[in-house]
Amino acid sequence: MAKNIADRIDALALVLSVALESPRRTEAERAAPAVLAVIRIEAGRVRQRAEDAADAIVRAAT
View 1 (tube, rainbow, N blue to C red):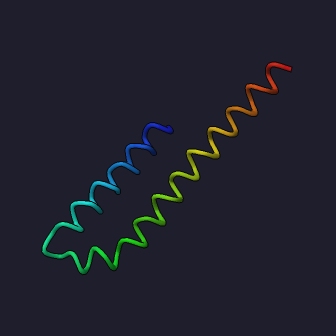
View 2 (cartoon, rainbow, N blue to C red; view 1 turned 120 degrees about the vertical axis):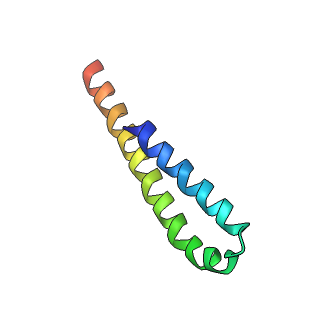
């Protein structure tokens, strides 16, 4: 699951970087904050899953 989310984050970052180099740069610049917000949300999901997994490991070990 986390790999899938990481792949989506990478894809969004790649699309944004390409768009910023395209003739439609102005549109990409306007869309950039929304794309970055999605990346932050996805990264937060990965972080939360990692924390949940770490907590489960600690509980299992005690």
